Amino acid sequence: MKRKLLGLLACLAMVLTLCILQFVEARRTQSGRVHQHQTARAYEADGCDGSQLCSHLPLVVIDTRNQELPGKNTGAVDRYGESIHTMAEDGTTTVRVDVSVIDQKTQNNHLWDQPAFSTEAKMRIRGHASRSFVKV
Image (tube, rainbow, N blue to C red):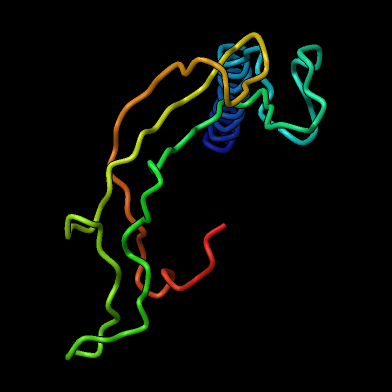
């Protein structure tokens, strides 16, 4: 009987500890940002009328410099029966692109805002069978 009581008390202590930790974590990570884009808008007063891209969420902007992304299926196959894919102009499988992150914590983010972070990256189309799917 004592073992059952001790086991029950141990289980109750664990559940209570988990509840307290979850409450403390929720208060620690609570910020002014809202992550449900369709249900809540944090900052409506900066002229977002729906005619241009405007979001309280961070924007990730990828500029391909008007280059075609390599990796599209050409419809041809090699001697092993594998699909042949396009290459970049220099013969590689990647192209250099510019990546920017626009993230203003006190107002909506727009494409013309100053990026919080910018870098250069390499990009290509990935996947084997999924390469033929429409990319939107």
